[in-house]
Length: 144
Image 1: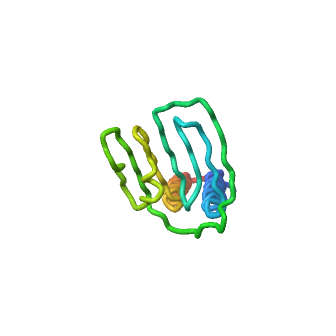
Image 2 (image 1 turned 30 degrees about the vertical axis):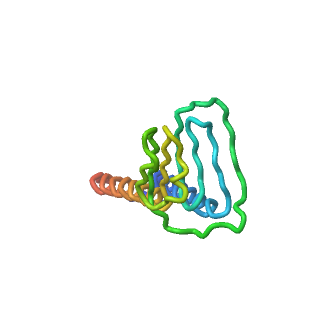
Image 3 (image 1 turned 90 degrees about the horizontal axis):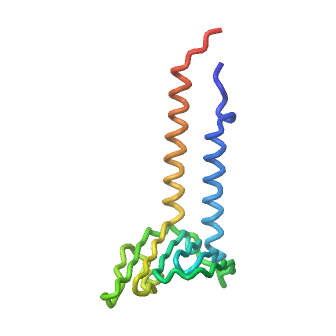
């Protein structure tokens, strides 16, 4: 007897995670959600997630959840990375988000990961796990 796909924990967990990523993508167009301290700061805005780091290591934690005036369009953003060293006048920027990434200060870096890339990675792992499950089920022969 073949077990139905709807009984698979992998199937439902993958749908749940991909739904959460899509919800975050949608929410990033109308809200700024960010939090952390000056050592590490995480945020969800502009169709992606950003992570920034500063060498100051301040212990003050805070959280921001503010609506974006006028909203932002949902888009297919590109991943980016920016780093500012002490001897550089302009930060090293890898990617296309100069307007956000150029605001780094000496000793800091900012990484931006778009939601579509996260969704692609989750879907790839999900499909791989489902195919492994299907292969294992095919190899298992149940005799009545």
